[in-house]
Image (cartoon, rainbow, N blue to C red; front, side, top):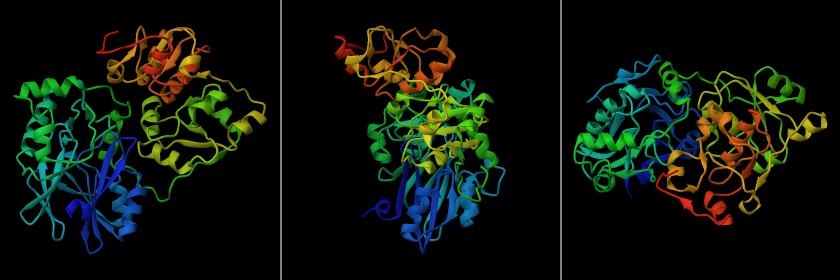
Length: 456
């Protein structure tokens, strides 16, 4: 049995595409690496093994989630391990290249691996002189590397060159060394997103296309060419993490709101987010509500589409997990949560307040109409309906006036398309249809073939 099988627990956030790690150090002690603010899964894993978190290590100033390190320091009196160059404004053990931390039987050696961020560290876990594995955060990830444009376009190439040297340094480790990245499949910090969560140095030498680049310039071209867009909240969170996310004394809750309170919030420039499944939203919703179905990707779209300084009320369906709403919002720094509509749409309708509907149709039911594709650029390039108008969902609000009348709004399945329709409805489009299905299904139903290779 390997060390990872017996002593390491990977805690995967499928929505953000990230992994945190809990390392069993023995004697009831543990190390947490890149833990997020939503610590429910970590606490459950620690409780199952009877572990107490004594160290909380962060590989870098995260842009896509709030760190749980300050909370672990408060709850467990854990020592926070992080880069001294990050200039964090809370108590921590500042580390630099070559430093070592005695974990009591195991050793954590610090490797400076800038690129994703300036102060990025990787943590090499040693048992005596044997390399067990390396926590690579946002440097080397499975078959890729993390993006280098989060500190501004003007520094993208500079950081990509730093990333090249960081990856080369990591590949000098023995081939059998396990690689435990933070960013993975589904993470907008990946460039491009990987598919697996963990790997080894030897496997990456064989499989990672960036490591096959013959020289630094080629590496930089390949990495920067793969960079897509990322959520707007990424530009805010690294500074919040540098200051230290606020410690929560108790788990946050969503108060119950009356229809009149929700109506007043909307009138006062607040936002209503309807988290019900797309079909439920389509059947009847509050005019002006933003549809973001509660699923793994909820936090990403909440942070992409709404500012963090506005009050938000939620419309929920039966049996939806209110704690999940709160923690998805809090883990990306959205804390101005006014509450949720008590009784859902039933109480809204009973109060005599207005509702509206949105046609949600299968491909064979959709009319012949302009086709608006709101998927990410890479998805669109891989195959799209001929003649489609394309705007990524994250940019759609800026292009609402360009949406054609009577459009069929589409994504990969329907959830993002319903979100897009709710954005367009707020901008005055009231004649939209949302596709319940994929571009391929639509094309087949209308006797078409998908256009590939990015041609429009």
